[in-house]
Every structure is written in C-alpha cells, then in structure tokens.
Length: 258
Image (cartoon, rainbow, N blue to C red):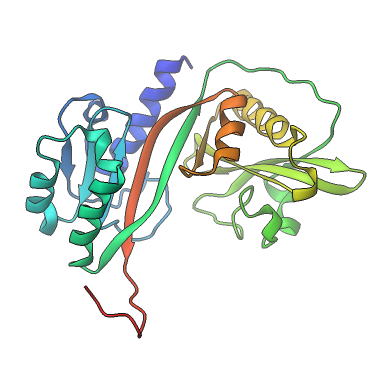
C-alpha cells in the first residue's frame, strides 16, 4: 500500500471504533459521537468506553456517553482539536469525568510505517516465533511489551522475533493482531543488552515481515518514553495519531470523592 492508503485504512478502522466517518478525522471542526461496541473494533475492552478521543494532528473526534455531550460541546468550542490533549485541557476534562465516576487513563502516541520494506541484514543470532511457539514466554515480565500476558483469541500474538546471546534471549519484538490486518508491535530488550541497537534491529525485522505477509504493522508508546520513540523513528515509523480513553474511577477507602 502507498502511504496514503495506509493512513486511509487506519482512519477507516478508527471510524468503526469512534462511530464516525473516516473523513471526520481530516476536518477542521471537532466531532462528538456516541460510543459503540462494534464487532470489528480492536478489542481492548469488552465494554463501551465512557469517553475516547483521537486526533491525527488537526481536529479531534470524541466518542462519549451522551450525558456529557452538552459539557463537551462547550469544552471544545473555539479550541483546535490537537490542543485538547494538552494538560490544562485534560485537567478540565478530568474534573468533569470524575462527576460521572470516571477518569482519564492512558494516552497512546501511535506510529505508522512507510510502505517500503528495508530488507535489513544483521549479524545477530535471530529466531522467529509463530503463533503456536509463544506459550513458553507468556507471563514473563521481561517480555511484557512484546507479548500479551496470555493468549488472547480476540487479539492474538501472531509473530515474534528474538535476538539470542548463545541461548539467552537479549530482546524480543512481537506482533498482536489487533484486527486481522492491523498488527501492533511491542519490544523488550533486557537491561544488560540495551543501547546496542538490538531493539531497532528486531522492530525493523518484524515490521518488514509483517508487511511481507500483507499486514499493516503499527507501533504505540507513551509521551515520555523517549527510548521507545527513538526506536520507532529509527525503524521507519512516523507519528500518525494520538488516542486516549477514560476508565472507571476506583476510589480508595481513605480517599474522599470530589
């Protein structure tokens, strides 16, 4: 696929999840919709999100419970969409969500690849893992980014690559099929092997192989994880969109509700 086709495919997927049109992510005006639980969504939750937001760098699409739509319409009035993700605006949103028993959760900075395959060559000792090979590695903290905690049939780990020092694993990159075609890449490198380019090599190899198999690899990280950002940028990924969601607020017994 071309770069534009890659972006269009992602906008089509997010339109399913945000209950909007793909072109709504390309407009000037912010868009507010009601949540859906579509069968073709990326299955990160089995419940509707009370609120989700996504921006490709211009406007923002917000999917939220109808009870806060009046407040949201006032909140977004006169604001450029991408500024809604800034801390001072998040603070206002957080206060409103707490009135409804929710709070903001993670902010995901998402990356997409170019269409080119690099055909990287490496001297590292490499081993590939197919879906049926990953059971021995589940539940291991050192691979918590590369693999899910366990086998998840709704978004299975379908491919991984490891770098070996003898028979010791130095690092692992893995893909979860969040949809049949969108494969999310995660990477873990053991502390004693970091700063050697192992993460960059593994992510590049995995990205290229996913593209060869007709999948669209994508990569996500947090705002402050600069090491992860550097790996993404050095392997041919580029920042594409930002998304975030709320979660139900759990109040500790010693904490007073606002």
